[in-house]
Length: 608
Image (cartoon, rainbow, N blue to C red; front, side, top):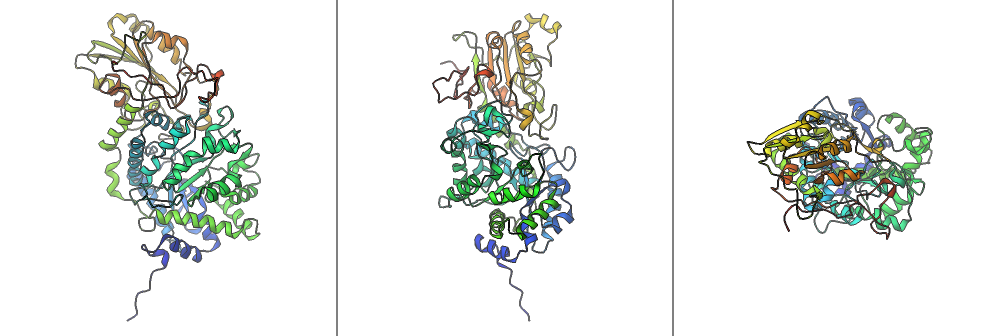
C-alpha cells in the first residue's frame, strides 16, 4: 500500500512561519513572485487575471462595490470568488483582500460607521479606540476582507489639509496612544513578541496598515500630497513616534505616502523606506504603495512608467497598488529583473515579506470568509460602541454667554424647540468622506441615526420638535414659541485633495444660518466638521453654546446623550483652533502661539 504524500512545508500549519516562507519561496517562478507583488482593483480582477498572473492582492477603491447597497454577504460572495481563483493556481497562494475600513467597514451598507479619527483623538481614550478596531475587524472579516488600510497615524500640522479628519491630532504623543487601533484590528501580541514582526491573532482579526509613511500630516500649507520641509530630527521627533508604537504592536503592513520629504517623493525614498523603516526600526512586514503611487513619480503622471517601477521597488516598495494596468506593471517588472536593474534579491525580499504576512494572518488555513460573523455587522453592541465614541468625542467650546449662567444641558421637556441647519438630518454629512464612497455622500446613505432622529427620541412626550433644514421667515417670526434652537451646520463630505481648503469657511451659508437663528432664539450650535473651521465673531457672540461634534458617524444618539445631560462633555481639542486662517499653521510649542481655543481645551456642562 502506497503511503500518502507528505504535504509541503509551506502547507503544514504547525511549521514555523519562516520555514513555510522559505519553502514556498523556493518553489516559486519569477512570474509567481512578481504576481505576489501586484495588487489590482476588484473591477479588473477576473478569474483569469488572478489565476494566470498569480495576483497577490485585490482591493476596492472607495465607492467601488459589487453593486449599490451591497450587504456584507454580497461582498463575501465576491471576495470568495476572487480567492477561489487564487487557490486554483499552481501553488494555491491565497490573495489578501484590502479595503479602506478607516472608521468601521465604511464601504459596506449597514456596517457600523464610527467617528472619524479626529473625533477619536478628542476622546484621548486608547482603550475605546482598541475596541473600535476589534469591532471593525469583525465586520470586515464578515464581508471577506482580510486587510484594513488603517490606521492613519499622521500628525496634523495644518487643518487646511484635506485629510485632517484622518488624523488623531497634532500632538505626536496623543497620536501614538491612539495607535491602539492596531491591537484592536490585529489582536494584541504577547509580551515576548519581537518588535517589528507582523502579528495577527486569528481569523476574527484583520491585517492593519500604518499610513502614510512618513510626514504626510506636515506638508507645507497643508497641501495634500505636498512637501514636508523638515530636518530628519524633526521627523524623528514629530512624525515617526506613532510608527514606533505601531511596530511595537506587530503592525503587519505600512503604506508609503504620496507626499515628499524635502522634495524627495516617499515612494522613491530608499533612505526612509529601507534604511530607516526596515533596517533601523526593524520592520519585517511589507510596504505597500498608495493608489497609483508609482505613476506620480513622473511628470506627467504615468509617463516613463518602467523607470517609476524601478525607482520605487528598489527604494523598498514591496507590493504595488497598481491598480488597473497590472499587465504593464508585470511586464516592466519582468524586464527590469531580467536585465538586472532590479536585483533578484530585492524581489525575494519583497515576496518573503508578503508571504510572511499571509502566513501570520492564517490565510493559508482560513482563505474564505466566515459567514458566522455576519451577525456582527451593524449589531447592537457595535452601535452602542459607536454611540459611546460620539459621547466621549464631543468638545464643548462655549456654554452660556455668562460664566455663571450655563446654557447646557438642555431641557428635554421644553414645550417647543427648533431644530434646523443643513446637517441636522443628514446621515451622509454626519459620516463625512470615506463612507460608502470615496468622497462621501449626502442623505440616508446607510443605516443610522441622525441628530434630528436622536433629538426626537430623547425629548419628552409633550415636547414639540419643529424641524426645517433652512429656517423660514415665518418660523423665525414665531420665535417666542421656542424655548431654544439647535442649529447643526458644517462641512460637506470630502476626501484627500478635494478637501484641501485655503479658507476653511463653513459652507452652505452656515454662519448666516447660525446668526439668523441666534439673533431670535437662544441657540446651541452643533458643528459637524472634520477639522477646526473659521468661526466668525458673530457666531461666538450671539450663540449660547457651541459644540465641536466632528464627523460622528452613524450613531447620532451619542450627541443627544450629552446635550440633554445624560452624560457630561468629556472631549478635549486634539488640535488647536485658529482665530483666522492667516494665523496658520499654529504650533503649540512656539511663543507666538495664539489660538482661539488651545490644544486640549474643552468645557464641562456640569456645575462646578
